[in-house]
Each structure stands twice: as C-alpha cells, then as structure tokens.
Length: 259
Length: 337
Image (tube, rainbow over all chains, first blue to last red; front, side):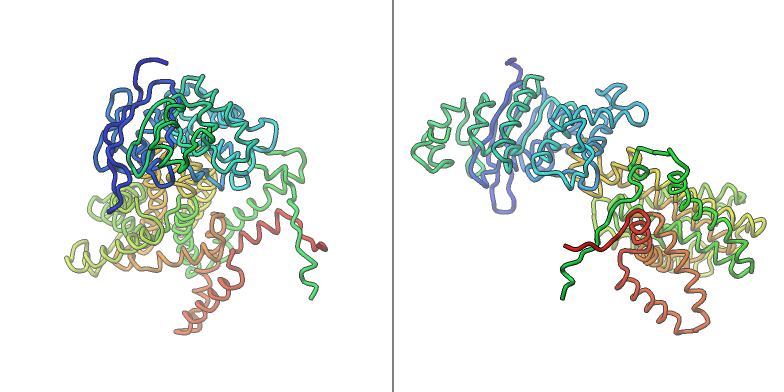
C-alpha cells in the first residue's frame, strides 16, 4: 500500500430539512486500498457516497481527490476525473441490451481519452470493448447473456453491470454501494474474487456493505457510521471489538459471532 | 367459460433479418422482407403529388409535410430523449418569423433563408429552453407550451415584427413541384436520418437519458448537454417547417404560434404509434387530410374529428405502426394452455 492518500474527506455535513444525515464525517483512503463503510440502516452511508460523487450537494465540508478539491462539482465531472460509483438500486438502461449499456460510459470524455483507439475509433469498436469489459466482469462472451435486454437480466448480472459501467470509465476509485445485497450465497461467492481482482488491478475501492463476512475478507480498514456520525475507524477485528459499535450496529454483546 | 384455456402465442418471423447489427441478406426473400415496407413508404410518399393533382390538395400535402416534421421531432424528444414537448407552435413560430425577417429585411433568397432559419431557429429555441432542461415530464411540457403563448402576446402588445398584421410579401417557391417535392424529400431524409441516429452511439446516450438519467451522469456525461442536442434537433425540424410555412403562404404572423402545431403532432403520434418514428408520419398523413375532408360537415367537423380520435385512443391505443409491426414481424396462433 502506497502512502499517498487518494481520497480525503473533511468534515462533511448534510442535513435534509431537520434531519442531520451527516455530521462532521472525515476519513481518508490510501491508493489501492479497500475501505469499508458499515453502519445500521439510515446511518448516512449512501448519503456520504452521494455527497462525494456530487449527486447531492453537501452543506459544508471538503473532498480532496489526489490533493485537488472536488466538493460539490457536478457528478459527470467527478466521474470523468476517475471517481465512479455504483448504485444500490441498480440503474441500468432497461431498454438496451447489456453490451449497449456500456457504450454510453465509453462515450464519456474520460473513456475516450484513456481508451485510445479502441474507445473512440470507428463504429463497432465501442461494442467490442464493451463485450471485453463484460467478459472481465463475468458475462460469458459466447452466451446470449451480454446481448439480452437489461430488463430481462437477473439481479446478479445487473449488479455486475453496475460495476462494468464503472470499469468502462477506467476508474481510479470505485465507490460500491452494497454490491452484495440481494444476491444469493453462490452469487456472492463468485463476486468476491471479482472485487479482489479489481484491487489487484490497483483500483481503490470504497465499499458500503451489510455483508460483514465478505467485506472483512477484502477490506483492510473499516469505518462505522451511526446517525450520520463517525463512530470509529480501524482494522476490522479492532472495530468489531469496540463497545460502541457492538451497541449501535449489531445490538449484540457478541459481535464476534458475526465475523 | 373456456377463455382461460386458450392464449395467443407469438413467434418471431425472420429473426435473422431483424437482429440489430446483423444484416443477413442471404436470399431474395429476406431482402424483400427487409426492403419492401420501406420501399412502399418512400414510393407512396413520392407519388402523392401525382395522385392528388388539384391545387387545393397540393397545399394540403405540403402542410402535411410540415406537420410530419413536427411529429417526428415530438416522437424523437418524447420517446428517445424523454422530454415531452408541447413546443411545436414555438418552433414553427420562431422558424417562420426568422425566415420572413431574413427574406424581407436582408433580401436573402429562399434557398438561403430556409437553411438559415432552420439553424438559427433551432439555436434560438434551444437557448430559450435551456433553463427548462433540468425539468422533466409535465413540467417541461408546461414551459414549452408557455413560450408560444407568451411570444405571440409580446408581438401583439409591443406591435413589433409587423404586429397583428404579420410580415407580408415573403418570397414564394418557383413552382408547385419544387414546393411539394422539396418538403417530401426533407420528410423522407428526416425520417430515415432519425431512425439511424437513435441506433448510433450518440442515439444510445439519448435513450439512456430517457431510461435513466442518473446513470448517464454517473457515466461521466452531462445530461443537460445531451438534452440540449436533442432539443436542437427537434426544434431544427420544427423551425424548418415554420420557414417552409412562411414561404408557402408568403406571410409570417402570430397565427404561426397557434396551438394546432403543438397538439396535432401529439395526436398523430398517438394514432401512428409512439417510439416508431414511422408512426407519427403515418398519423399526420391520416389526420391532416381527414380534417380537410371533414370540412364538408361545417362546424360539426371538430365533433366528428374528436369522436374518431377518441375511438382510436380507446380501441387501438398502441397506435397503427406498433400494431402493424407486430403483425408483420410475428406469427400469431391460438394455443391451448
């Protein structure tokens, strides 16, 4: 792990009317790290991702990416800098086939710049690239699956399609919003190696997750949120021993049972 | 009684030909299957001036062409970009006035004013609609409806641009053949151009904006930019129609902001089948001549017109083209369940 912090978040505050969704949340993520964010429902995890990626304007606070401020910039600009996200409720283009879904991110300025001739050449090249990306993420190239309409794909493939959309942008950071939720045990088992592979490719991952067992396999550090405030941060084993975390998140005395 | 025991089974016909991107042209049957409907449409459109030679119907054909441009723009915006626009009258008015001003004040010939009014009108419309682009659905529709109403009142109240008299003495076309065939060719090019555009890469982005605009933002593309391009294309088509209208009537006036231009394209899209692009064209070719035929009934015209529309919407709400495409592309048979 290199020493350089790729993403730094300082004192992010966000209130929806009278509800304080986030209060003074700060953390920093090293390059190439897998950083987990956990917390009970409504603790502000998704809001935090929305604030970092610009989908929601924060009330106060600062986000630095590679030392440059990106707070409150439009989401498409932030994505073009290399900070991409997946959506918890999948947002594919239902009326398009899976491989055509990826043509849209491949048209972004970032993909055209970094993709070279394959990203922006003649007609058809983008479709070849998108099939390559889909294969990388677990769509069988020779099956019908990549050519099916997104509306007819099961949840497992839609979650992969979310990741594939991020990969099409050749990202430096991916913020994953519950990629394991709604999947069966076998689907999760096949997703974990994908996440590990992304990490080996040098992509920094920030993962919101309720599936602690799988998260702890890949994450090197964990941050716990509760009622919009940061409870603690550290390596998974330490965090789970923390009394406040047991009380707030797990509601149980024996947190270690869940690991 | 035993209705539940039977259901209609639909089987795709000629799947090889219809698969997008793969054009299997291995036999003359498949080529015919593919080409025939398009050929019938194109030849049918091009023969119209000969089939209806009277001066009165010549004008009607030209007017239909203008409505087709509006309907294509509406269908494109509504079903491929996700913006419901009631701005037909706005586009026509801006295009019409632009062409008239260019022709009268600067003395430019018709061959220059129509392209310039198309581009200029599209630019003016896009700029004026720019603040409304973040809106969606009925909110965007209201803003586009407000512009023609406001502009016609402004022209009336300030007595600018000829006031209620309009701009008179705009140049006319050299002869009726040029007048008709130019608009029919433009219509054909607009139809097939748009059909091609929505399957190109940029067309996929438009469809993405309609399907899921947040995902487009997460993909690093500005939705405002793409919506603006979409509005530019649709308003360009509308302004072209407006410029044409000024030149065939030799006049531009506030009646070009009439709501007919906003409403008839929508009715045509509903009748023809939304999202097919051919449907709105057919819808216009049915609706506009129909309203001319009904002139024989005097003031009852609108009542009969409304009844026909209502029957259509209640019993064939999917539209002619959606129905026809299904019949053409699929076998249907009853099977026992």
